[in-house]
Image (tube, rainbow, N blue to C red; front, side, top):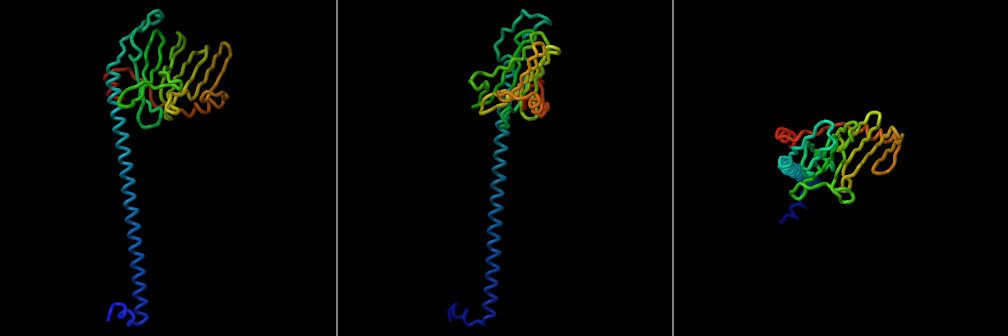
Length: 246
């Protein structure tokens, strides 16, 4: 008697019971396969996240190593006496008195911001990116090297910092003369002045912009208030390079 004949010879209730057992085993097997697939997918996702985090960390470490070397090789030795408007800095523009790291494009790899003092209460900020294994100038929309003016013209003072939203801030306060606030970020890979507010008290001129377009003072203040200070410039010394470039 073959297997089919033996099965047909069994009472109906036994055959039905065997069928039910087969169905249960089939359901259990399907659930096991589904569980295994989910488990494997989870492992793959966790592995991918781990690889991404490791890659980002290694890129940041490489950038910081390059920035440290760059800063060490470009310490500014320029000094100027109080009120001396005649003496000018003859050093190349990479020479810097202070620096700060700021992730302006949100990719997890910080940009390097440095200050070049060109004279008494005069100077500008350079912004560098780490690209293709090198420290390079960040570029503007017109493909020029970024150069943020922080000259006070002997009136008032500048405050430079990065905010928690990843913007570079340059604020000039001139007392009764007025004030000028700017916040920079990256847009499509280029340095962009995201917010700009200018209060010229003597002529009574007040202008406010977002990405180059006019906005009201109320709108400017609302957006600017969202930027909370997160870090400031540090003097370019060996101790500070070790402490802050990491």
